[in-house]
Image (tube, rainbow, N blue to C red):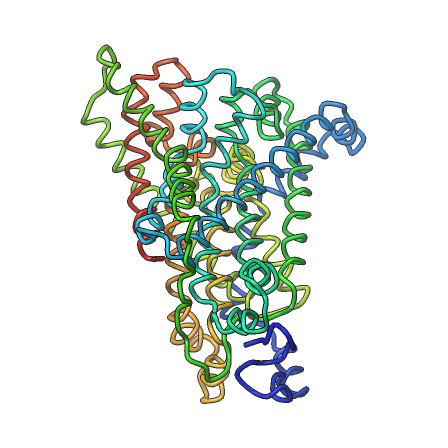
Amino acid sequence: MTDPTTGHSADRPAAAAKPPAGRRRVAAGRRPSPALLVPACAAALLAVLPLGYLAVRALERGPAYAWDVIADDRTALLLGHSLGLTAAVVLGALVLGVSLAWLTVRTALPGARVWSVLVTLPLAVPSYVAAFTWLSAAPGLAGFTGSALALTLVSFPYVYLPVAAALRRTDPAQEEVSRSLGHGRLSTFLRVTLPQLRPAAAGGGLLVALYVLSDFGAVSLMRYDTFTRGIYTSYRASFDRTPAAALSAVLVLMTVALVAAETRTRGRAGHARTGAGTARPAEPAPLGRLRLPALGWCGAVVAVAAGFPLATLGYWLAVGNSATWDPGTLADTSLTTLGTAAAGAALTTLLALPVGVIAARHRGRGARLLEQAAYAGHALPGITVALALVFFAVRYARPLYQELPLLVCAYAVLFLPVAAAATRAAVLQAPPVLEDVARSLGRSPLAVLRTVTVPLAAPGVAAGAALTFVVCMKELPATLLLRPTGMDTLATRLWTETGAGSFAAAAPYAAALILLAAVPSYLLGRHRT
C-alpha cells in the first residue's frame, strides 16, 4: 500500500517497502517456464499469421509498388479519418466508462447494482445494428458524426468494466490518508484514485481503439471512409490484392504504435495488494445535490446506448407485417451462432491465458514482444484475417478450408487481446507472493499455474471469456468469408437482409442477436456488482 504523500508503504515501515536487492534481481531475472512460454508462442504465431500473408501480398509486385500505394493521397486521407475517429471514440468511451464506474462503485447512487448491470448491456449491440438504428432515425448523421456516436455507445463498456473492477479492489486507505491531509474529493480523485485506475483505463482504451480501427459494419453503413472500408473496397474492386495488403500493413503499424503507447502508460508500479492490512470496501460518497443529475446521466446513457436500438428494432418488428421469416430458421440460426461463438471463446481464452500471465508477471523484451504479437490481428479487418487464413488453408491445410475450425481460429486471431487484457488485469491484482510461496514449497511452474495463479485470476479470466463470447457472436466479415457452406449466423443473415433493403425482415435476426448477447453481458455486469 503506498502512502500518497510519502510514496512509502502504508502497511509496513518505509525501510521495508522494497524487497532486498537480491530478491529483486531474482524476480526480474526469472524467465517464463516452458509450460507458459510454449503455448504463449503458439498463440503469438497464430496471431501473426495474417502478417505473413500481408508481407507476401504487399511485396509480390515489388516494394516500389507497395510504397506508391502507401504514399498515395487517398491513403493519407484514410489515415486522417481513422485516427480522428479513433481519438474521438476513445475519448468518449473514457468519459462514459470512468464516470459511470465512479458513480456505480464509489458513490451512494440509488440502484447502483441495477445500473451496474444496465450499463454493460450495450456490449450486446453490434456496431452495425447501432449504426443502422441511428441512420434510420436520422439520415443526416451519416459520416463522421454517426460513426463516432454509434461506436462510442457500443464500446464504452470496454472501459467501464475494468475501471469498475479496479475501483472495487482498490483499498480506500490511500484516499482516506489524502483526505485527512486536507485534500478535497476532487483533488483526492485526481492525485490518488485516478493514477491507480490508469492501467485499467489504458487497457480498456486500447481495446476501444483497436475495436474502432478494425470496425467494418458501422463505417460502411455510415458511408465514412476509413482503412477498413478502403481495404474492403480495394478487395472488391480488383483481383490485385497488393493495394489492400499495403493498406492493411499500415493498419498493423498503427496497432503496434497503440500497443506500445498503452504499455508505456502502465508505468512500473505493481497493482497487487501487499501487507497485512484489512481489505474493505470504500465508504460510498454522498451525492447530495448531484443525486438527480447523476441518475439522469446514467439513465440517458443507457437509454441512447441500449434502449434506442431496441425501440427501433421493435418498431421494425411492428410495421414489418409484410416481411416473411421462418421461426424455425431463426431458431436454427440462433443455435448455430451460440455454438460457434462458444467454440471461439473457448479457444481464444485458452490461448490468452499464458499470454496474459507472462505479460503480468514477467518484464523484458520477450514478454513485450509476445504481448504485442497477440494484439497484431485485432486491428486487422476481419476480411483481411479471413483471406489470410484462406490463403494458409488452401496452400498448407486443405482439409480445413471452409470448415468450422478455420472460422474458430479467425475468432481467436481477432479477439485474442480481449481475453488477454482481462487475464493480465486479473493476474496483476493477484498477489505474486502466493506464487513465490508455492514455488518455495517445491511446486512445479505448471502446478503453480494450475493451483494458484489460475484460481486467483479466475473471475477476470471468466470475464474475458464472456466478453470474447459476445464479440464472436457479433463478428461479421470473417464469418461471411469463412463460414462452412450452408451455415448462417444471426450476423450474416442480418447483413444479408439489410443489404437487400429488407429492414423489417432483418429485424428479427437483429433482435435475436441482441437478446442472446445480452445474457452474458447481463451476467458479466451482475458478477461485477
